[in-house]
View: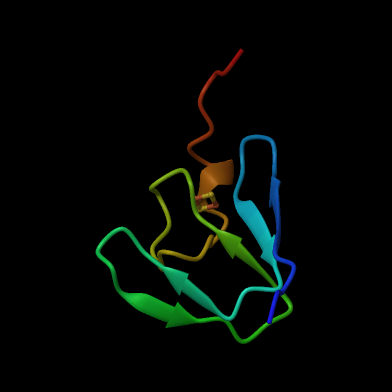
Amino acid sequence: MNREIQVFACPHGPLLVRGADIVVDESGDEHAVERPVVALCVCEGSGRKPWCDGTHKSIRRDLP
Ligand code: FES
């Protein structure tokens, strides 16, 4: 069964993922997705990876 998964990259923030059942982190650990949309940390600063906890707002870097 094909299922549509959408990913949206927030400027200077997380990846928003809609439609996923599982997220596999960089260690290969699986995390069940229990919401329609989840935010994945891409800044490496979250205290609850792989999920975004908003830390990116305080460690924002100067980007072009
Ligand atoms: S992207 Fe939000 S805490 Fe890392």
